[in-house]
Amino acid sequence: MVTIDNLLEKIEQTRSRMLTLSRRLPLTSDAVVTASVQLDDLLNEYEKQRKDI
Image (cartoon, helix red, strand yellow):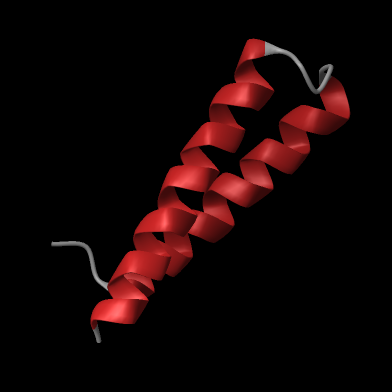
């Protein structure tokens, strides 16, 4: 199971990657959209785990 601290680290890494990609590529590019979906999934998992505490 992923801990909250691990999730927060992954969230920040994914957010940073998405922002970097969005500065170089169109927002509708596959890479930016994929990073956005990954970030959404991580944020949803974080919220779920936070509520379970």
